[in-house]
Image (tube, rainbow over all chains, first blue to last red; front, side):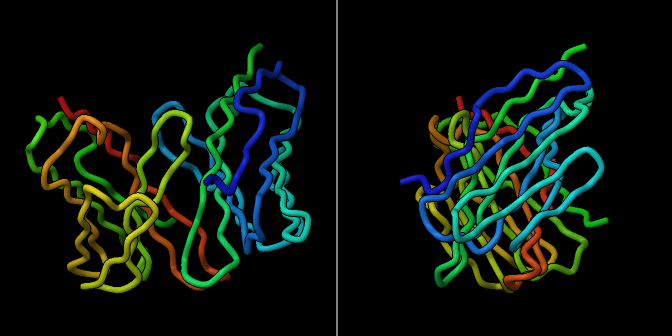
Length: 110
Length: 114
């Protein structure tokens, strides 16, 4: 079964507001990566975290392997932030395995 | 900036036909991956490779073959395309290693099997 639960599945924000996306993991993950898929279909790397938090402009992400979750905070949302956001978690067990969340469709409106 | 190029960007194939999706990276990365995206499922790993001339099965390998003839190139092959393989396919690369697994994605290939 799926090991990553991403929420919400859809989110509407007005310009200037903020919110948080969350991914919960059913098992221990070694690292997490966040992407944004834009209207052209390209996947843009946002963050890669093995622990702690990272911030880049209006985006901030946190990853807690022990508590099995990761968050992506968006503040002062802009129209160009619209798109689908994915988290991808790297399993902590042997071998290589990355599991993606099902995505959050974000629409930022004026 | 890392560069991963997929071709074609879109393709229409007939059921039972052979389809080859190509991926080329100029990042000097060891790892390359093929994912498919279906609505509600996020991205699922089909095949990956960590060295030339070797491929590994991902989570959903059935119906797909992969080929890594060189470090730069990784192909996904559908020998007998089926309707259920209609999806968007993404190729990705990464340097490899637990601390170097940032994934760099191509723009995607939209495949429609009719």
